[in-house]
Length: 294
Ligand code: PDD
Image (cartoon, rainbow, N blue to C red; front, side):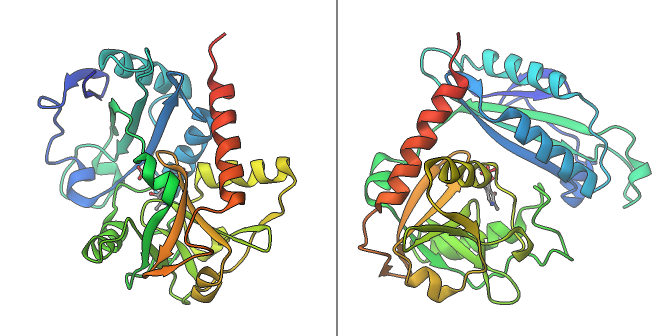
């Protein structure tokens, strides 16, 4: 197993994979990305990630030079070259598409050809104890981008907003930083979406609070509906989180991870709750079932 990178169709190992400094992804952070992981060696919810990729691209007027099928073929080639996707070695796959190489100008016409990079490396699960005990989080002072600035619906390579939030969380010894929007409502974590459970109902902030439309978030809402667990979007404030019976975060690489502490205050009983555990079990069952090879 190793790390392999596909730059515009050419495979290279980690040390040799390069992008020109005149790429506007580097110069201006102009680009979008998706993080996908495999179960059973198969990229999970691939179609949904491609749909979001195209939404992000449209929001920055970036043409995607490949079909979903071509992207899928490049994923497979890159994962195989890294000796991943078999014998139980799951892959983390990051697809980045940038504006491409061009003169120093914000004019998209300066860059005729987008750059397409795919990174495949071993997927690493969060430690078992994070699932067993839950994680420590903190509400950070960095505010999530207002949708009228850089809309959080764009899965942008320009991650400074989230990086600064996470820096604050690191300094407080927390696993994740929870961000509010400009109105003081809870939005999402720096690299994950946020959920609470109150009196048996699963609640998550609405997209118009200003957050990424997480693929895992949507999948979890569907699972809750299928299990007959009430679930909906609702505007949430700090007090809702502190008084929640359970809380958890969701992301492609971390599935559903219980949040048991916020700013040193235990949530619920300070241990992962039953609704979170039920949803996680069903999430994993479906992930395996949907990727099972015949
Ligand atoms: N992060 N919110 C933010 C700001 C994110 O960066 C992510 C994902 C999510 C969850 O989205 P999804 O369920 O589609 O993974 C929410 C990925 C894993 C990353 O940055 O690598």
